[in-house]
Amino acid sequence: MELLEFELLTEPLRAELLGDEEDPWDAAGLPPMSWRPKERHVGLRDESGRLIATAGLLVVDVEVGDERFSVVGVGSVIVNAAHRGRGLSLRVITAALEIAATLGPEIALLFCRTDRMGLYLRFGFEDVASEVLVEQDRGQIVMPMHTMWRALRPGVAWPEGRVVVHSRPF
Image (cartoon, rainbow, N blue to C red; front, side, top):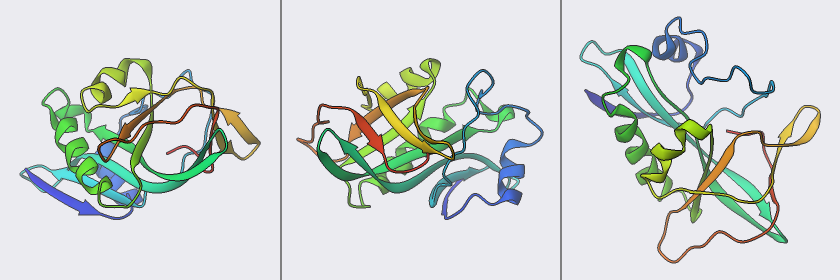
């Protein structure tokens, strides 16, 4: 398998990755939301050259309490249905976090469902206990998924207070 970096997950790449899977991110049951495209991706191609796994990154501003700072947003972590259960998400997340550490911010942030938290805990992510607001067309809403953070440098801590993500979720 080949590990690669690329910018946008274009529609042809998305179709290659997801195939005809109807709900690859298990979004059924969540309120309809619009998501911000990631600006950089790490991916895995199989022996035939098909994209089979990705993790995306972008830098966004957040406000926690009265402190405003940038974080690296991690999202679009997905493995093609036919290739799940082989540890491929570990490979793309590891590579994505290595890149995230070079982008400037000291913290990585992501959103996930309860059943995915264990995966991210393995990488040192922790649950954000405070309410998290994200942007949508109708204004700010409370994020209905878990928000998790991880330091990208030693000695960094998550501040206390309500969280406002100055972006659509990623």
